[in-house]
Amino acid sequence: TPAIGFLCLATLVPIAAVVALSFGDFNIAFPEKTRFIGLYNYARFLSDGRFINAALVTFILVVVPVVLQLLCGLALAIALKEKLVGTRWMRAAFLLPSVVPPAVGGIVWKLFLIPGVGGLSYLASLFGHNFEADLLGSKTSALISVIIVSIWFGVPIVALLLLSSLDSIPDEIYEAANLDGASWAQAQWHISIPLVLPAMGAVAVFQALEVLGIFPVIFVLTGGGPAGATEPLNFYAFLNAFTYLDLDYS
View 1 (cartoon, rainbow, N blue to C red):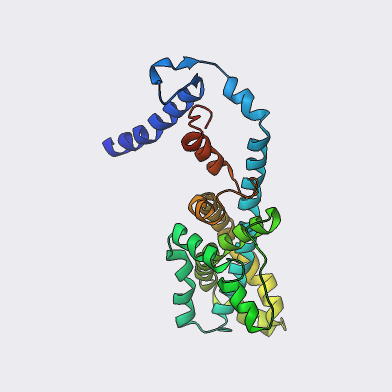
View 2: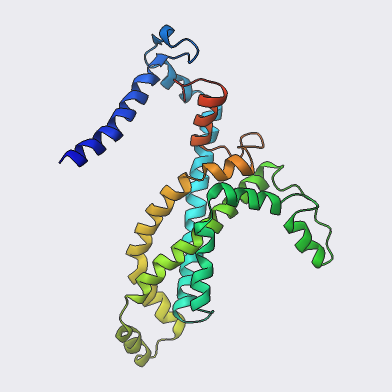
């Protein structure tokens, strides 16, 4: 249909343009001087230590948050299903991080983590501690902070998606397990988790794509630093394109 053809063009034409650009030496100030350089850019990134670091950071920022989002989301989904925590208001509250724009969430977390005067320092002072560590100033703590923010964004929607899967499990299965003497923990381990695994796989793919879009959070929270510790591939590509004006390499 025309609509499908338009969507294909809208997708394939930009991809083809980007691929073509990668084979040239493009100068944004003098586009008429663009020249063909073959596979030079591809050979360049294979020996680019910063690219390798960005690829590693991307891997960490996808795998670790998604795994923890699934674990925390499953625990919250089970707690909501079993009414271990408030249900009606809790479901609404869980959605709040998911509807906050990433850039706004990044600013909020940056204010929260300001050394000495941020929200975290204030909470520590309530317990008699003087917390003035700059969590965004060291490589390890900055990366952990980005992971925590990513989890904060993702857990609510994961919990609700898994809750809908748990709600679809017939009560008769749990009743039969109860008659057979299974404990609550055994029922969750042998019934809930196996039956919700297919949904967890789909949610994992969805969340991996969502985590790849964490660029606005990193932009306002750490700027990719310190020393590239929180610089994923999309942020590195952004820097090459709009800071270094190296469009063909980006």
